[in-house]
Length: 174
Image (cartoon, rainbow, N blue to C red):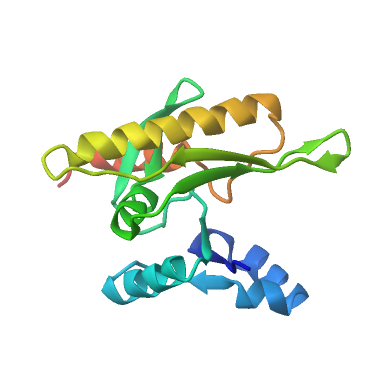
């Protein structure tokens, strides 16, 4: 039987995650909290993948201090998503699936979609490849959000984060 590990960056949702971990010991054991993925973390994750475990990473969250993002079109606007899931999947050499679980007619319905058998990031066109994968993800997320528009939410202002960064960048410096 495969074990499921949620790889989480909890900066955006500390209170929410705290509530869940207090509610369930099993949930806490299934979480791997990270601030950044270094070689040690990557090796641990690779060991888990090789043992048949499933890793779950939320692809639409961007760590607060991270500059490693890629811009995508999402609902007609530019939004930033993390590059990390694609880089990590490339390093781990594992298949990638998308999971959506909206409530439909009073019940939760699980959608599991194969995203890629392998994420391939050629050295020469690495940024272009990441951007393509990220846009494919954004397109699928938008598709599911259109089906259940009130069920997607983020723990931070998804578009404002980019606007604030742009305003700061564009302001003259003394």
